[in-house]
Length: 80
Image (cartoon, rainbow, N blue to C red; front, side):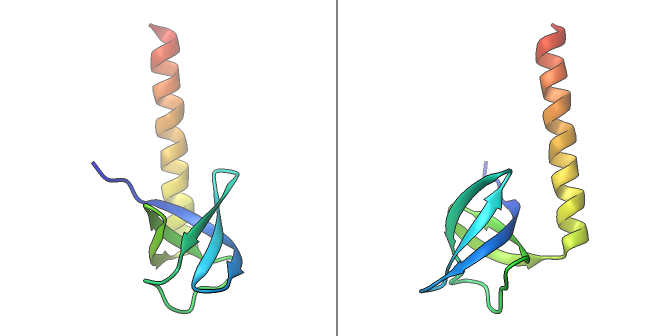
């Protein structure tokens, strides 16, 4: 199973590289597959590559859903 995550670009670097914020952790990724990314954009990231830009509202909804799923999974493991 593959999982691609929405992440916010926090720094642009040379050679089509960038730093993203992944749940509070900075990670360097490649922007080689996506054009015209600027700091503050959300991108879908999979195995170190930005695949596409994402609308900020959609990114917020997706991240909120992931947070809900994480909380539900945590409650399930602590309830049993």
